[in-house]
Amino acid sequence: MGTKAQVERKLLCLFILAILLCSLALGSVTVHSSEPEVRIPENNPVKLSCAYSGFSSPRVEWKFDQGDTTRLVCYNNKITASYEDRVTFLPTGITFKSVTREDTGTYTCMVSEEGGNSYGEVKVKLIVLVPPSKPTVNIPSSATIGNRAVLTCSEQDGSPPSEYTWFKDGIVMPTNPKSTRAFSNSSYVLNPTTGELVFDPLSASDTGEYSCEARNGYGTPMTSNAVRMEAVERNVGVIVAAVLVTLILLGILVFGIWFAYSRGHFDSKYLTSSKKVIYSQPSARSEVSMPPLGRGGPPGAGVRRFLAHVYVFWGLSAKEDY
Image (cartoon, rainbow, N blue to C red; front, side):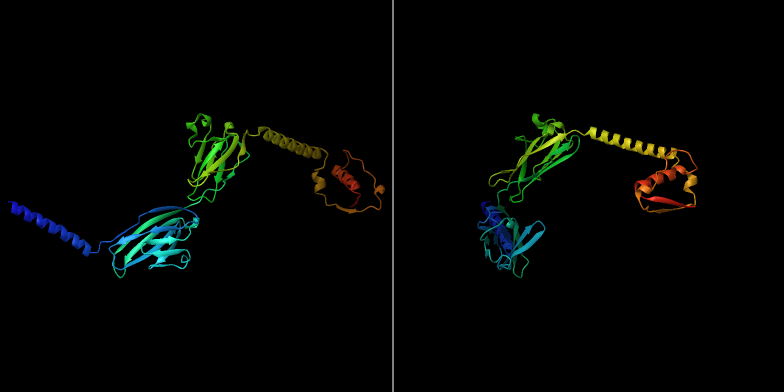
């Protein structure tokens, strides 16, 4: 029995060894990085590591991704022209002589067998650390109670991108206003990623001095200037006054039309007359007599008297060609 068990154990060991040998023969490969995320201050050197095994003739390439931008850093074990002045290639990775904030992104190390089908890759995230600059704010000096008011805060230098904290009268504003008694009467939405603070609707208690702080975990947090915003009531008095003025002007216009009509200035017989009137400049202003202005006379006389007064005023005389 003991001999039979020993034989079985030997057979099992041989079977396992055969599997290992087959896997090696099939060309099992690995690609990995000892540091998949690298954080380094700006203007410093840095190495991105890439280790691999199982390749007899490896072909190494590196590519860079940042948003919609993709560039080759290394192609077929050689640094490309756009990087050759500040990046060197080694079988164990690539080294930057000095990094800038534009180098922040994802680098992919791609290893393939020259003339074969074996392939492996690993991604390395590079974050170039830059402290935030002083943020700028857009805060209205006044806003109407009951309306929507939008306050913004931003800065462009921080890497990684900054997150924002808002202050009112020097007090930190929580993300949820209902969580603190000091802001329980406010209705706002605060986005720490975009730096946008939206009041909807604005209330009288929202009057105060607002400022924001930018921080990204590197360097000193920066605070904006404080700007005061007044929450004001709707100016009902101005609206009422405008309506009254409009009504008064409309009344004057209606009265003027009625007065002209009562004086006979809209006599249809006169307006349809075919008489031709010729006007000429008098030799002297004093020679023109002032016709009486009043009611009476033939149809259209009121209009003629009115026109005569107008022309006398402007120094003209009228001659009617009947």
